[in-house]
Length: 431
Ligand code: ADP
Ligand code: ZN
Image 1 (cartoon, helix red, strand yellow):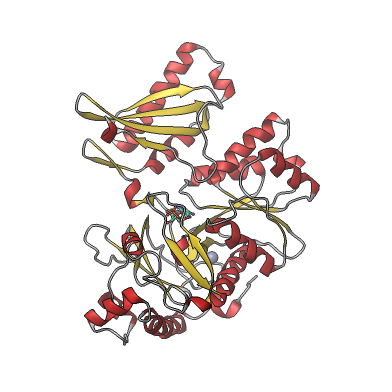
Image 2: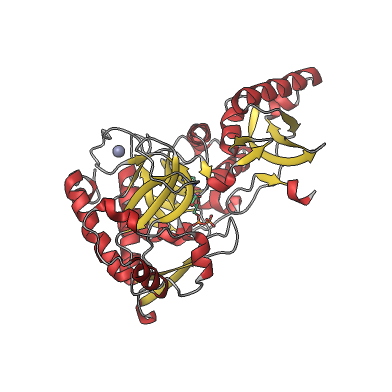
């Protein structure tokens, strides 16, 4: 059941004591980096008496990492560093993160904990369909799966034909895959006349690295006949392994023995009570090369109430709504792309691929939504397509409170990305 029972089921009080102890160790180590050395001296903080005192520490943002590139946050001498990684650069220049041997070992342990929790065991065959290289999704899961003892296929991203070949030859039982790529691969499998539920041996999918809705997860589970577990992480906190779903699939346990979490109001920076949605802020408790204090992830979530029936004591966070910078302001109304995804995936005639374009028309903002419809619906009559379009627009109007111009396109015609999906094109500034 448990990879690491002592830590996974640690009594909350003991967990908090462990957190305070490691927070103070982290503070001492962080102070050895040029940037934190200066910041902590300015604030006169060297030790905290309780976890609540964390508010005395400054926030750290992505921009700080860029401003002090490359070594401003490095807390150990270079001869202790064995690896660097970098974030994907979804929202600007990449930032670099350094690791000691101890960091890599802890990280692999966390990923193994997650995979074990889902049911993966030695004897399973794990295909890692993620980019290997600076992106942490590849190597992060690779070492986790090896640590657990599963046969690991470092398949890398893309190339559906080769992915299928591995899956068939080695009877792959588990895969780490981007939700957007899982859908793309399913189109290829259908073209090959295969039914993944019958023709493959898949049991577990680990999906993450990009926002996706519950409807998207269910669609992936339906197509492949797997359990698809939501997996969250970010390069600044090692990578995947920060939070993960257990078998209950009801929120992700955020591993509080390694990361201290706060949820704040992204505008004011004020701490929000449990249950309220806000920006996730993380402090690493076990990182050596580059500990980060109160790192603003910009990812929006909330802490779920109540204990999890699985017996793990680490609090759960809700599925991410997206990043605070994903929010579109349409004529004053705040909209998240995930709201659009949730609405359209609820309609059976609609396919899985969509693109959102925002334009200025007559000085007003206007969303154009291009959606691939399913083969059966597309070959329907014109009035049927018109009525589908109207129904989608009406459903979106109810959900979002704005009018969306819907365009139905043929299956397989929208562009797909090799890495994380890019679905929103805000062209208002280019007009
Ligand atoms: P980048 O910030 O350049 O994308 P990373 O590769 O470090 O760099 O990606 C981390 C980010 O990916 C997270 O901050 C979050 O926005 C997104 N992400 C990761 N896992 C998930 C998930 N399960 N659900 C939603 N978003 C996720
Ligand atoms: Zn649980």
